[in-house]
Image 1 (cartoon, protein in one colour):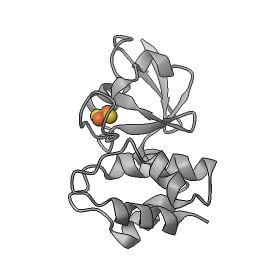
Image 2 (image 1 turned 120 degrees about the vertical axis):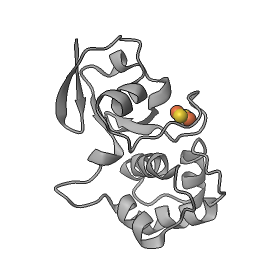
Image 3 (image 1 turned 30 degrees about the vertical axis):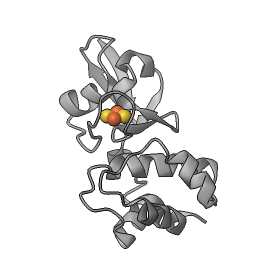
Image 4 (image 1 turned 135 degrees about the vertical axis):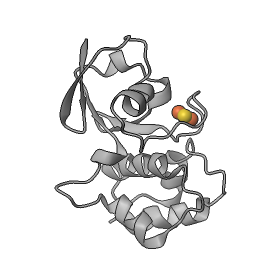
Length: 149
Ligand code: FES
């Protein structure tokens, strides 16, 4: 058994230490906002925060996050108030199918934590590992700028 802290809640999980964080989130804890895309760390759909940094949960072992703080899209709000990136995505509706949305939002939120007023180049660099099959990248950049200070 291991104890994982997800969205500030401690969860006791009986799992193989080699299980991926993504499989634990989706299959054991029903936190299905985090998406499975490529399973190889290449698309960004599975992005979550570990100690505030954006990581690909499909290539992160559950055992490696014991003792760390994991945040998923379900835990990004604070006291019922959506994160500014969530609000900006709701307001500007930048996506089409939106399968990539939670990964995009988690990567953008990690960027804004580090750089509250990123340049377009900063955004392009930070979001480079998040793929949108609908090709809505210009809208996503605008939404992130809307969320920035
Ligand atoms: Fe993890 Fe694609 S599903 S990066």
